[in-house]
Image (tube, rainbow, N blue to C red; front, side, top):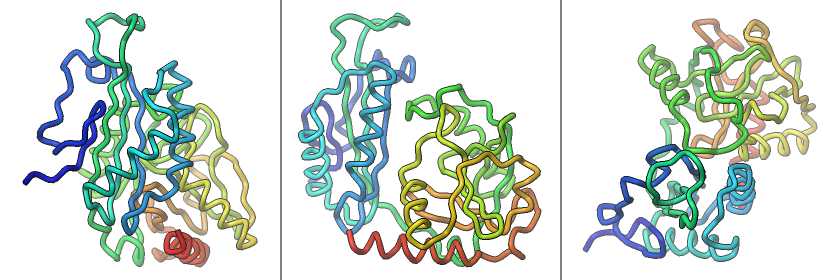
Length: 282
């Protein structure tokens, strides 16, 4: 019997039976929003925070949602249960729906809503114990990076370029300075102070990043929201990236320039320990 791991427009079903109309505006225009939520020991981690961001993203593109928050959360929990995902992730996507291709919003268009629950292998321990290498690339994305839309081609191209060059990821930079990575937030330490880009149109409001910032304050680590230039980042005492999938990862080299003698730093270790404790207490 096929595994039930998908929810599509009111039905739980195996992924190979889930089909979306080729005239769906998510396919034609990238007209939709999404979220990725960590499943840890069979439970959704920070689901309410992800739903807050989903609601904001949908409102920013005037996208009606097919369920209220309580209903959506119940469906999310049920999909994790029937899929038997223990450690992995839940991908959730909502598009404006199916209609003949016109640029303006079509009338009476019903949103398409689907979710996929997936097991995920943890990253190699060496990623956390030895750190990763990244490269810097120009930020060529659209000007509303604060909305978690389906329009990810610049991120995909940058990630592919980074991987082909042998890097774990790419950090974007603009005229403002370092913004974020292809699918992660960037945090930098200067003389014991944790620095990260200010909130605005240029970055996605990272839920894991906000959690790390809260943990830093609990640990009495000073936090400053400010831009860092692509030259300044090479002078950092520590660099790290955060996202839902990897939690916190230390960066030990940028474009071949070693950070913190090529070793994860002490602030990273404190934050990683505190984050692990938070996960286990959830």
